[in-house]
Image (tube, rainbow, N blue to C red; front, side, top):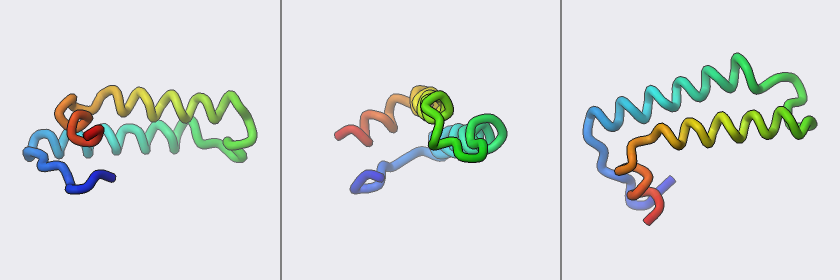
Length: 67
């Protein structure tokens, strides 16, 4: 994702893992239905879910990944 890999503290790493697991659960259970790419509504719902998950990331990680 980024180079060099961001140095995360143990707590930050656990937060990122928890957010990623939650996003995957939401996508699997609610958003990714059969032929989800064909419908604009479902594509938008997937995009919004991902954006919301990224909004929950600690600001330190976002600062590192942007630079």
